Image (cartoon, rainbow, N blue to C red; front, top):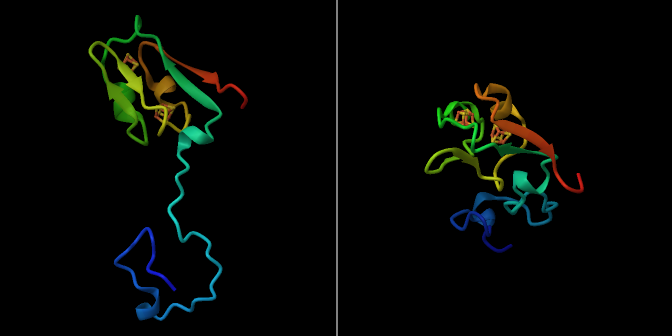
Length: 100
Ligand code: SF4
Ligand code: SF4
């Protein structure tokens, strides 16, 4: 068995791992929340006062500071809607993903 691709320091043979195991979860999946999210947050820049409440509450830290507002990193946003619920300015709207 070759050394683990994701963990090159891990030597399965030395660790006594049999080489006939089903290879489930042996590679890190490239799938990110943006690949399966059904709703996405959209920030109204005119309403945003850059208070950072959304940044504080986002459970996956995907709010990004811009010059005059906060924006969303859609690659890591999972669409939970917490930011939209907590925004005191009601500046965030959750919209359905196309094709969801
Ligand atoms: S919580 Fe709302 S108003 Fe505050 S930074 Fe985020 S989007 Fe802007
Ligand atoms: S929808 Fe959820 S994951 Fe996405 S930015 Fe808002 S709080 Fe973060």
